Each structure stands twice: as structure tokens, then as C-alpha cells.
Amino acid sequence: MSQSFRHPDILKTARVEGKVTVDGLAEKFGVTLQTIRRDLSELADAGKLERVHGGAILPSGVSNIGYEERRQLNADAKAKIAKSCAASIPNGSSVFINIGTNTEAVARELLFHKNLMVVTNNMNVANILVDNADCEIVVVGGSLRRSDGGLIGNLTIRAIEMFKFDLAIIGCSALDDDGDILDFDIQEVGVSQTIIRQARKTFLVSDHSKFKRSAPIQIGSLGAIDTFFTDRKLPKPLAKKCKEWGTTIILP
Amino acid sequence: MSQSFRHPDILKTARVEGKVTVDGLAEKFGVTLQTIRRDLSELADAGKLERVHGGAILPSGVSNIGYEERRQLNADAKAKIAKSCAASIPNGSSVFINIGTNTEAVARELLFHKNLMVVTNNMNVANILVDNADCEIVVVGGSLRRSDGGLIGNLTIRAIEMFKFDLAIIGCSALDDDGDILDFDIQEVGVSQTIIRQARKTFLVSDHSKFKRSAPIQIGSLGAIDTFFTDRKLPKPLAKKCKEWGTTIILP
DNA sequence: CGTGAAATGTTCGTTTATGTTCGTTTGTGA
DNA sequence: TCACAAACGAACATAAACGAACATTTCACG
Image (cartoon, rainbow over all chains, first blue to last red; front, side, top):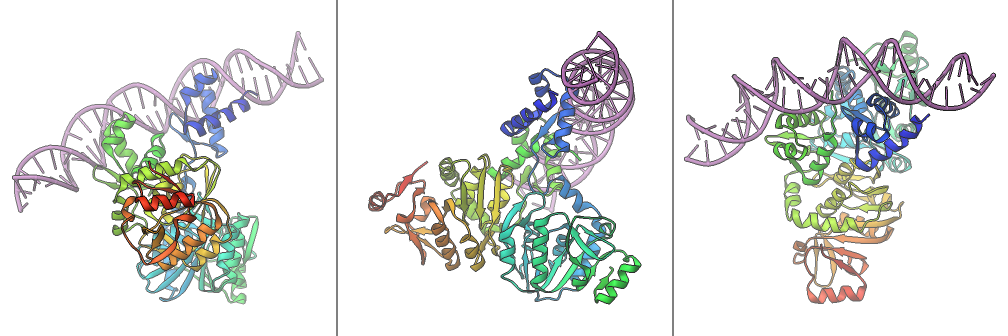
């Protein structure tokens, strides 16, 4: 298995040179181009490299392909949801905006609101709202996650605990039939829970693509949410539960 | 959707130089103008650059006009100072980088350092260093100041107090003959003082234009600084004082 | 020795990046 | 304001790169 012998070497070369070429590697190892292509495909699948025509480069920084794709996904639905959510945010509120493509869409709809105070752990949200001069922006600290511009970790939670918001706007990775709000990243879940705790009211924004998906970690229940902005009717049983919980569902 | 060997290189060039030209890139990579135009279009579509006639610039983001002007001011001197400062920063250090055009220049020179941990209260610094995959970025919280992308306030100080850095890199607004480091903004001064307190060593970066100016609030004395990176010899009396204090002066 | 699985090489139709050309747009200086 | 040159982007041709499928080699293990 000389394959596993080449992989570390390829990665090392990539780190030193910043890039690798199919031709160069084939010559270096004395194998055919196809073999190198297979190596690079595997390394790219594993996320260690990013494939380009003729070779590979180190994975790029923030807003990488995956994130850009996610942002494009259901972009129309997201914009509609964001519009109706923004309409429910009064001028003059203090609002927390969490990580996520749906929450970012809300930030875009807040560009013309007045006298806002927006607290966020999302660098993209801060960059978007810079253009609204009538909006105080507070960025909470944390480790920068290159994949989506999110700030996470202990520092983030500690900072959020110093606030009390009128309104929190959060997204999620998945939503199951019991009405449990789920996510993939344990660090992010800790942040989300803290946000809910520190907010007087919480808005959840999520397009219907999350209804069927699953994720391993629970943020909380829809019952803890005041208003849920989405783009499709909820499954009947869940809609009934929301009524009992007093959770308002708003479709655009 | 496409990717190219050139893209990361173009982005880094843009971050270091502030702009890129179609001609320059075409020559650098040995490809035709049309190819570079395609590259720039793709990068612009991805939101990583902003296209202009003849080339591209960094996306507008936080920086406003006044700030852009300040950044251009003495740009050469700043780059030189930054280079010599970066050369004194070992790989693997934990570094705090404060607000300021001089400190931002240092961040640009850290793009090829390895295994860094950079803590900053400057959104621009975070945006610059995103391109260095071998650098953990921590953003400390605070109120976003639109004029320069700085994060300031109580939250900032509280967050900084949770760290202990190998190295702090700070700038200043003015430097008087007594060796007192001065600034205009009281909030920023509090942050600067906290930074110095939490760092094992402190580097000051400042071009000579600050020598003659004055500012109302005192950050501290040059005596508390380990190394001062600048571009002109200090006035004789001050140079003598620095010698007594054990403050090293480094000219490029 | 055989055998089988994994790795590698080979072939070939398809995709992609690049160069070239040309009509259109943009910036600049009179 | 107008004219001119530079820059632009769309369209097409081409050569390189790609990946799937199949053939061959290598090597561990019975």
C-alpha cells in the first residue's frame, strides 16, 4: 500500500509550496498521472486539499465552497423568510443574530431598520450591517471558524452572558417531528442555548429543507421559541404541538 | 464553477498590496489578459474581490473613505516597518494585534507565518489572516467602530483579560518627547493598557509621522515597550532615554 | 506455489481551461 | 461635451486534463 505512503508526502509538499501539480507529483513518485489523480481525489474528499485543474491547492479560507453553496441553496426561500422575520423586528430593538445562512439573510433585510442594536457572533452579519449607519453593531468574541465566519467557543458564551436582548434570531441544522431543534456542532449548540437564555423573545428562522433532516445534538424545543419563520406548513402533529406551546408559525 | 492555482495567489496579492491589476497578474502568471479577467470575475462573484476597471480591489467591507486614506498614508514606510516587525515574530507564537493601520500592515506580513495564534480586536486583521490557514484567529468582542473596523469597549477589555499573549503589537496616535505614547480615544487607551498588561512582550509599530503630533490621552511610556519598530531615528534625547529603559529601537 | 484483493497502468470519450477574435462599454483628456 | 484608447466580456476553437471502465501488476496469505 504505497498509496498511504504518498499521501502524507503530497500534503507536506502542498503545505510547503502552497500547491501541487499532477504532473510534478507523477514524476516525483514515478507513477502515472491517473494514480496521482486518484490520490488527489481521495485527499480532496477527505477535505485535506482542494482540487483544481492540473493539481490541487490548500483548502481556502472563509466562505469556502461548501458555505457558498449552502448560501445559494434555497436562496429565494431564505430571502422570503428573512423578509417576514425582519418585518417582525421593531425599530429600536436590541437583537442577537446567530451563525447561519438563514440568519445572515435576516441581517440583509435589516439594512433599513432604524436605531437597532445588533449583537452577533457572525463576522458576515457584522460586515453586512456595517452599511446600516443607524445600527450599533457589537461583535462577541470567539475563535473564528473559517468555514462560515462564525465565532465560537467559551469566550463567545461568556460574552453573550453579559447581555440581555429584546430578541434573539437563531437558525438550526435540523428539526424533527417532536419539535426538537437540532444541530451538528456541540460548541455551536452551547452558544445557541446561551442565546435563548439571554433573550426576552426568540425567533427561529429555517427553510423547509431542515424539516426532514436529522442532527445529533439538541439545542432545545420549538416550545421555547416564540415565533418560527419558515416557508412551508409544518407536519400536522407538529403544528398542533406548536399551538399548545404557544409558538407562532409565520409563513411568508 | 471553477478553481485555479492562481486564485489563492491573487487573493494574497490583493490583501498584501490592497489591489491587483489585470496586466500585472497576467505577466506574473504568464497567461493572457482574458484569463485573468475570468479569474477576477469568479473571485468577484464569490465576493472575495471587488472588480474595478483594470483590476480588482478588496471588497469594501468595513473600511470607509477616511480610513482608506489613512491606510494609504506613508504606505511604503508602514510596509517596511511591518516587515521588520514580522521578522521578529517567531512561528508558533500567540500574538495580540491591536487596532491601527500600522498593526494591520503587520498582519499582512504574517500571511506566511506558521502555527500562529492571533488574537485581535480588529475586524480587518481577522479578514486578512483568514488566508493563512496555519493561523488560529480569535476575535475579542466589542462594539464595532465603523471608521476602522475596531472592536472597543468594556466587553473588549474583559475578553482580553482572559488571555496571556507571548507578544502584543500595538500602534499609537502620537509619541511625545518624553517618550509618552498617546492616543485620542479614551476607550481605545483602556484597551491598549490592558493589552500591554496581558502580554509577555510588547512591540510598538509607528511611522515617524507620529513623532511630532500630540494627543490628549496617555497609553503609557516607551519604557514599558520591549521593541519599537519605526522608520526614522528618534530625537537624540528620546533615544538616550530608550537606552536607559532598555527599549530596543529597530529601523527597517 | 496458487489465489484474491488492492494498487496501479491503459485506453478512450468527455469536460475544462485557455487563447483568440471581435463588437461593446468605460474612462480620460481635449 | 466628444473622441479615442484601453478594458471588457461573449463566442468559438483547441489542447490539456479528467474520470470511468477495464487490464495488469503486486503482494499478503493460505
